[in-house]
Image (tube, rainbow, N blue to C red):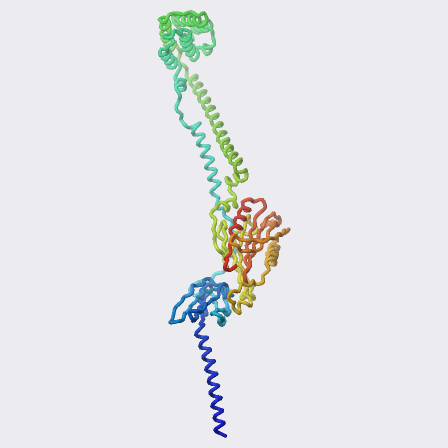
Amino acid sequence: MRSQKNTIINRLKTCALSLLFCCVFSTISYAQELKFGVDSTAVKVGAQITYKIEVETDTTNVVVFPEGQTFMPLEVIESYPTDTTKLNDKYNLIKKYGLTQFDSGQYTIPPQKVVLGNKTLVTDSLKVEINNIVVDSTKQGLYDIKPIIEVKKTNDNWWKLPLYILLALAIIGGVLYWFVWRKKPLTEEEEIALLPPYERAKLALQKLDESHYLEHSEIKEYYSELTLVLRKYLDEKVYNRALESTTDELIARLQLLKEGNQIHFSKETIHNIESILKRADLVKFAKSAPDVALAELDKQTIASEIDHVKEVLPEPDEEEKLLDQKYKEEQERKKKRKKLIISVASAIALIVLVFTGFAVKYGFNYTKDTILGHETKELLEGQWVTSAYGFPPVTVSTPKVLKRLESPVPDGIKDKVQVTAFGYGSLLDLFSVSVTTTRTATQNQSQGQEQGENKQSGIDLNQASEAAIKQFELQKITDITVMREKFSTPNGAEGLKTFGTANIPILNTENYVLGHYVMLHFTSQNVLQQIVITWKDGDVYARDISERILNSVELNKKVQ
């Protein structure tokens, strides 16, 4: 009886040991197939945690590691390439992920699923701690936060107005220099006109010698020029109506001046002048034709009598000289003033003409904005930037780089929701654009992901659009019109487009201005991506900026 009892006990021990061996063997086998861990369970804010998954498998098995933001609430900043090592007839695969978090606290990395052939392995959850950066107050002094100082928005194009003023002044100065201040080369007639009357008369007689009137028997033209030289000289120095007087009137005037002892003409001078003038009258009006020798003699006589007249002319007194100088200066000032007025008027007319030409070709507003400057026009025509924002990335082209915006999340949902936002401008500016990505941790994430899943998180784009409209209302935007339609990006991502008009409040006033807005919403898995563009009504440049941005939006196809 005792022997039979011992036999039963031994058999039970053998079964128990066998069962224990099988369990241990199964656990060791699992442990050998999948290993995971982090390089550190406590890091500072913004520092990287490296999460490693190591799988050992046959060369025939297909291994699929987690992809996307499956480590929420931690953010995947980089997914490293898989490191493969062959050991005999097996592969050792190591996959690493770079994780980070910008808020301090304790976080749980959810379990991750790894597909190994026809089975799925699941890692355990891991707890990590994100610590604030500790400041040593014994080495670094602590100070109160300075109050907010309102800074006026600087105009980056302040230099344009002075440049345009300098350009206009340069044009006017160039015109003035060319027409007023520049010493122009004098023509021969102007140089002759500047000569004193005596030198001018002598030069005219010299030119008469060089003429071919006598050679061609043009006696009438010869005597006309000869007497004109004499009359001009007498008109300037003796009698200011000598050019329009008849011969008898001129001679009578010379006799009167002689008898009044004003100019001491000799009888011979008056006689010679009278004889030549009367002979010239006969040639011009009676067709008389004296011979060439007499004509040449008369020219010599005129030259001689001009010399005699110069000798007997009285010297002008100081008062006459002063009056004559003042008169000449006044005439010169009037002439320069007239030139100045003409030059300024010409410069203004030139500027107006150029402006009108550009206005006709490009439009008045475009030309005005080009000269005076316009904020959105400069954004439209400036250097654009194409960049990816958030994760999954939203690639978009904008006039300026979008800056990261503060996106506070209540402490109670930090583990479930993560928001990243980038933007330029605000709703109160002439133009604004923002890109926001919202990621939520779902129950599916905490349990891992099945290979090939592409399930939506259940985010309703229409509800997301309504929520964005309510955010507008919270910012005191009124009279919002809403229109919706499907939207497709150039690379095939589909979403919802919401657009319309609204009354936007003007800063520090109770007034409103009409504006336009466009919203784009996309969703994939547990991610909601939003792009919002606003601009003031009537701003054609901002409208063109909006269209250009919308045409540039691209989403990661893999994520979509």
